[in-house]
Image (cartoon, rainbow, N blue to C red; front, side):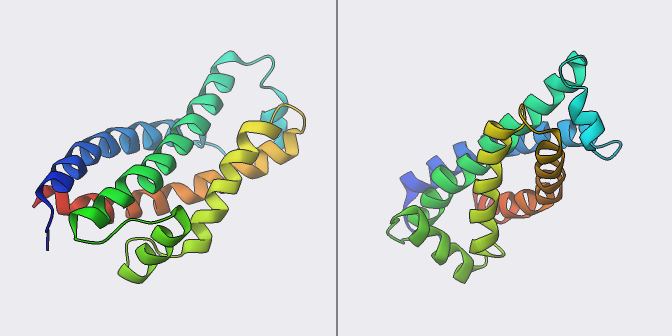
Length: 155
């Protein structure tokens, strides 16, 4: 039940952004992972501009969607429902209890993965390949979370 109208309006604006960001992430994900991302593919990044751009787009879109959901949408959702947003960890725990996120630890793991993808990929192709494959596996989790957090905005 929506309690705060201004927070509802903010949630609606953020929901439109999330839907767009999710679509872009899913499209990039489909192109990048049309075949498994192996260490051999990662080693070709320096010579393959198209592949490098897809990797950069995937990492940026993955991180942006996760940040938007966790740092903006979740507090807006809580406020719209009469809850007082707190720290990220508190909001995440509350989201898990409310069924907005499947598992708070998974969300924390995704944040760590995002940081790893951003900082480590140039130095170790095996680390990049593993991190990207893990990120690819998390895209459906982000999609389900986005659906849960933005559904109310469509009401």
